[in-house]
Amino acid sequence: MTQSDRSANIDIGTFWKALGARAIGSAVVAARDQSGPAGFLALSATHLCASPPILMVSISCRTSALSTILNSGHFSINYLAEDDFAVAETFGGKGPLTGAHRFVEGRWTTLSTGAPILKGAVGALDCRLEETIERYETIVALGRLVDFTLDGLDRRPLVSFAGRMGL
Image (cartoon, rainbow, N blue to C red):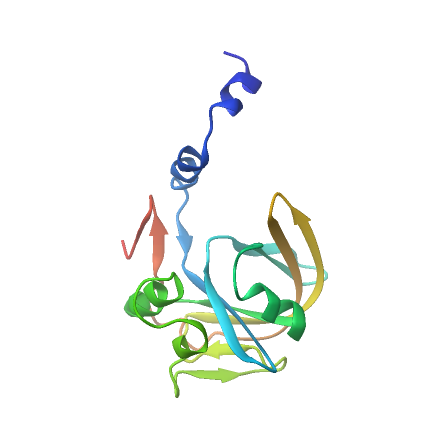
């Protein structure tokens, strides 16, 4: 079987199964515009380069928070701790809370850009949106790191592996 024959057989479920082999820190990406805060559980949030300090987040064009990120010109990446499992579930679309109601009062603050920052997150990165690239119904948002907090480094991270969180 050639490489092209194999790739023709990779459907969405198979793709996510293959990606399940990587352990990743669970993160909520969030922004705030004139309509209020919005966010989602990110499956792909990482760095592009260190100089300049650029991060990138993949966002489905169907994600409701996308318009808030584009309107505000910023986003935060909030790396969750193990005991933030409920936050991950909420921002992953499980449970009764939706939209701005997911931002529980008293749990969120801001840094330089005004993007929501989860208090006590393992780490939170505050980014100014610099560029977007659209491919395959996905937006890759590139943001320059302008501020951060590492207040939760003493907490264990919430890790996702093989489709499960909290290993």
